[in-house]
Length: 357
Image (cartoon, rainbow, N blue to C red; front, side, top):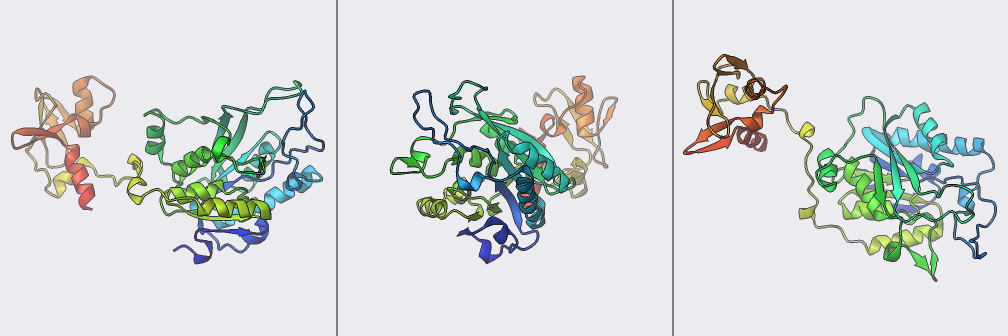
């Protein structure tokens, strides 16, 4: 049961102070966008000497790498404590900090699952022409430990990517246009993340009604997307200006209708039902004939759930593979049974059993 103090709330306070108040193993997913420690001491200018609105805020300034590392360890340690045993964490950063953060993630016993490259379609150019244009940021996705049974909605991500496996390079634009929060023509937050990025992260690694934490909420993107997707959110933001912007933004955010929040279920998360179970409980009887789709091949079901076709015998998968001369075959989709005057895939029997259970 979710602590009511954490349910759909954002607070204006110090992150480390508030993290210490959260009960052990209470968070399903954490997205953290900590200070990058860019070490920008001077203003950046374009060739025409106009000022670049870059990240030179006080909250991004640290006196030394050691101080930054200590800060990183402190908040990560609390995140490890409050993360559920099967929870996971995403941390985003640039080349200035992500390698240092990644090392601390491993030191604290998290298990890194992926590093993901957010390739920005419209990055800020390198005005001085002294380096490559910074066109990406790196995200580290890690489970609480090596044995965590973390959430990964593989089928949903595949569907999102036109039925292709989602890769670890994501081409998404930076936050721009109407989505970018502005006040008197100036950006409210210098590193506001696009909703598309958080949409993909939450869709990939959380489920409806999961509790999502963002310890560095900023302009509120994580909470906004969590609200839209039917997740429960809790956010912490120290800067009052950002907090007020996030609060206003959340009030204007509408939840997507519940009917549209269902996602494709992963095959590995479904209850495993061996073919033999259908025989055991009488859904299909020994001696029943099953066929290929064209009804040119017929096999008979044995009492132990194996099948026989001529000299071939074994599981529905093994016999189908032998018939096709293939290394493997999914017997659930290869074999059909008679239902009246029509043939139906035996997988229908399995799905019916799952539904009834």
